[in-house]
Image (cartoon, rainbow, N blue to C red; front, side, top):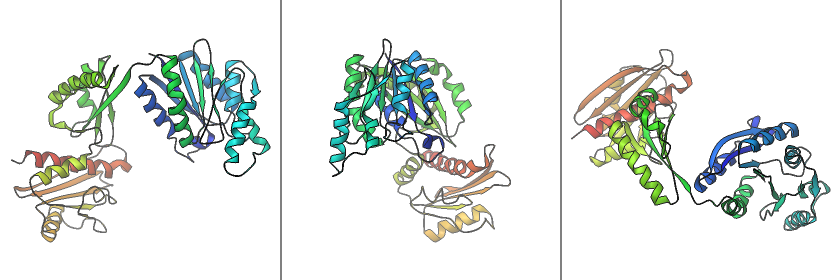
Length: 375
């Protein structure tokens, strides 16, 4: 299968002025084609640095996709950089200039002189029409690789990618496979503990299994490559069954399922109502529960007492209380159900800024597991 790299171009991305969404979209598209994406990166608007990155990428990969730097201004350097990387000159294309002229005319204007830069491409490049913008894309083929340069404007990039580039790649590389991914979400065990239980599965070639740690949650990713979705799903199903056997209730959901949703379903299935109360979480718990309160200031009495009071006032069956202390780096939790009361305190060893999110996820998982265990 072909391999690929993505290079996003733009100093504004490096400065944090805009968020790069193009890489994710291209990556998902390549995954659906069965193309192995090995690396992504961002380069500022500098011809030499871009050329160096492309030159190195084409030595490693079959497909190099750039996005950005195809505008009409002097700081849009992609055309020159691609040409320099591949050792060719640039040339003005009359047919591309006509595309630019027609695109601008749709807005009732005439193109500015500097927009002629958008009709310049590396010698020998395949011009790719941009029906939704003024910047044509282009493809340069070498003996080993192909460099595909797309606009940076997301809606333009996405349109050209799906309408022109995907069919091109399917034909050039006879792409008949796809990559299907399922993500299992875990809580209650750390990444290292999960790795100890499933480490041998992480060595598989197809499907592959990988871990990604978040704040209080660990994702287990299963990725399978096959010719059809059904074949890929069958490969994933076998591994998922084994993972669930080993990890049990540590797995709380898959793909789009979220911890708070699973916990709320567990409460609703028992016909119970729920109230939450938080101290020091800046609304994180309240933002995840239909009914929750965040009294101002710090907790002045015991959390269990505050949780009892919130439950009584709301007339709820279940009450979950969470309070954190940034100075002590601790989280205190209280849970009251029709079957009794529980409370505990845990110490956090991570970055202080993550304490509130960690405590929220820990508490939601504590709620989930306690409710699920209730007969």
